[in-house]
Amino acid sequence: MELNLELTLPTSINKLYINQVKYNPKVKTFVPTGKRIMSEQGKKVKKQIQSEATKQLKNQEWDYEYTKTNYIYMDTIIYFTRTNSDDNNIYKLLCDSLEKITYENDSRVLVRTQRIYYSASNPRVEVKLSPVEYIGIFDNQDILNEFESKCKTCNRYARNCSILNKAKEGRIQEEIDDTYTCLKYKEIKTKKGK
Image (cartoon, helix red, strand yellow):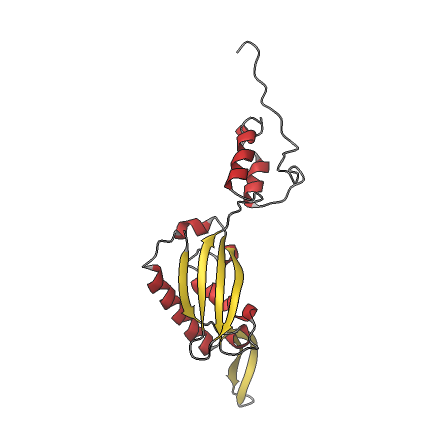
C-alpha cells in the first residue's frame, strides 16, 4: 500500500498565521486581539492542496481505514524556490491539509524529508505515504506474532492481558525487556488427569 501525490508547495509556517485585529471605535484604529489566525495565503494554499490530493487519490488504491489505528510514513521531496528555505516550516500546513482526506489524524504521520531541490519555475512537494513496518513496540509483524504466540500460553492472555495490549499501543513497560521477553509470563497450568 502506497500513495503518491504531487502537491503545491505549502505556505511556510512563518507566513501561515497572522495576528487577528479588530477595529476599536474608541481609539478609531485596528488593535490586536491576541489571537493568531490563518492568513489568506495559508487558506488559499490549504484549499489548493486539498483539491489536488482529492483528485490524485481517486486514481490510486489507498486504505484510509488503516490510518485510523496505524502509523504511516510521509516521505517528501521538496522543490523550494529559494535556497534559504526551511523544510520544517512547510509540514504544519501540509499535514493539516491532508488530514481527513488521506489519513484520519496527522498525529499518526511520521514525516521524513528525503531530498530538497530548488526550482523557481515549479515549486512543489512530492509526497509518498506508506505504512510503517513496526507495530507498537515490535519492530515488525513477525516479532509481534512470535510474542503473541507465546502470550497465548500464559494465564494472563485469557484475561485480556494489559501488558500485551499496551505493547501493541507502543507503550514501554518494565514488564517487557529489550529482547521482547515478558517478565510476568506464567504458563497456563493444566489440570492433572486431562
